[in-house]
Length: 303
Image (cartoon, rainbow, N blue to C red):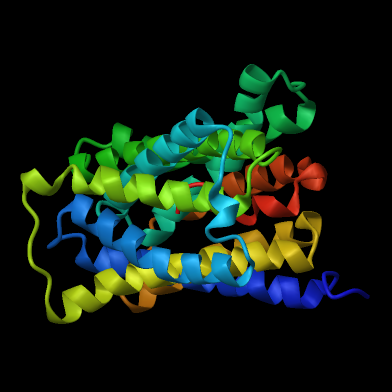
């Protein structure tokens, strides 16, 4: 066993990444009623830079690894990722954390389908099956909102934003796959964070507040949790193959469920419980085609 072939260590890092990512979403959910969306995105991106730059410096990728011959590719990837981040956080403000993250599981399914149209890849039975189960799960979640006379407009908007975030994340993933052929994973991640910060700063004229006390700690925590989650994910793909890690990606959904139940005291809807196995099955089917995924793809596309 080599230093880079330590599957148990890699699996542990993948689980840790899920816990840290859940911590980020808990922080975002906790401040979403009081802090403007753009300000949340800015703090999440700005404080994620700290662990990210240190990590890249330790890997001798900063600043020399940031050079690029494909600036337009980075611009597209960063734009899709930043928009996905905005949509994701807006959805978190309107939904349970677990609901928003479950819909995010559609990203790899949508990416597999988008790869057919954008990259000329084959439309396989696995991709069609994954899309079918994933779509059925979303219908299961959304149908009660559409069929009920007392439909909550806020929840319906949240579900649509979560779907939009998943679609934008899928496009960002497509760009990551393309950029990985020539670009450093660190550069891909850093340019995304910088684009998110710039996009968030553009919302400053809409009105930000001066955070203090617990609110400030939660905003900083969102950034640090997100930054360290990306690092843990990247290292996980360094020490274990993607196919070994794939089953443990779904454990990450356990922490948001616990957060909803124990921290926010939110109950799980019946539609969520029915949608859960369908969407996870669709994502699992789509993941069966990940055998050729490069370890560098450990950088999450949007969050």
